[in-house]
Length: 410
Ligand SMILES: Nc1ncnc2c1ncn2[C@@H]1O[C@H](COP(=O)(O)OP(=O)(O)O)[C@@H](O)[C@H]1O
Ligand SMILES: [Mg+2]
Image 1 (tube, rainbow, N blue to C red):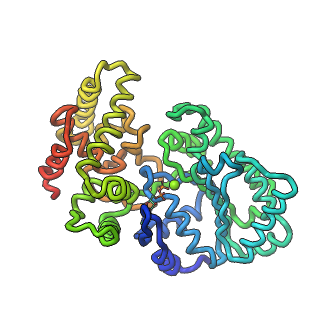
Image 2: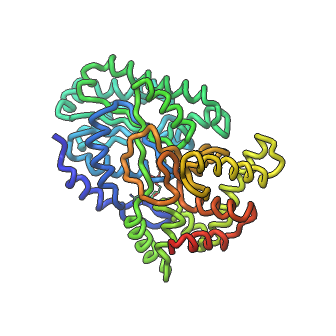
Image 3: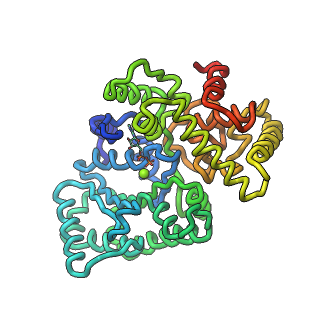
């Protein structure tokens, strides 16, 4: 049986994660741990974990893996396909397991690499090597008491993207093919390594790219895979993180409620605001949100569709939004995610995200930037678009803050 969930969560509570030059406490995620242990490990064998850009997927999986590593219930084999690492040789592998197992796996891997310098990033090859290592006599016996081996292939979508040579990762066929191949490799390996397959093998791909998600969903339709959604932290957890970071940086009078209305629990974006912008949320709104995300996305869309100007793109967006809001009975159009539906490049540029077709590991907060089918990845995007729908393209941070205030939030 798996160890007590509360015991695992208790251990995760002690973890420290990076925040700029600081370390902060790992927060929340009880619901996700329960859902992960209960549903992910009960059902599909190939899972895609997706969510808002930098929602905390890697941190969640690594912290959970660390917390479970001495239980001996499951072994995590964590491959990091982070591009700079991959370029050097093979993906970095981290083994989360009781010390003796970890030692055996690492020694076996090392012996293979000594015998034939093993430099491959090919997923099928990587799988073949690690599974043959796990099947070695001594290890196989030691793994007898282990319930399952969980393989995580992190950043695989980014790696594919870099391979595709297409900076926008729009080549669906290429990516679909690569993921389909990955899933196939997994299936073939499962059959070849039958003794190990009794141990239950799970293969997880944390992904953040919308295109990759679409591919994952297409594969899911064939019953091969399942997408799981992990959201940003909830309001209370963000409050705790903000207070901790305020203390660490000596910031005074931080408006936690406003930060929730801007960041919606995305800790990585808080890090950008604190470290790169020294808590100056007006400048952060101007440079990161208005210019780098919204305007840039509209410009890209304008170029592709020859609208003539981004003002015209916005007009088209408002037309579409009004019609959809009417059709779906959403009331007056104010940038509701279910009325915009990720169009205008908003999905591809990680401004919005699709919520359908996935199992939700996290509970989503009830907020205007989160719809039934689509959501904004962070609320600041929603408020900026709302201000633009009201005032046109040229909005300033003050307009956005006013939009938040007048909605009666702060
Ligand atoms: N549960 C958490 N509690 C506190 N901080 C977190 C938590 N999860 C993530 N973070 C912070 O958010 C950052 C981004 O998380 P990361 O796991 O890299 O996101 P993703 O893998 O989804 O892109 C991390 O560096 C960490 O600082
Ligand atoms: Mg990650």
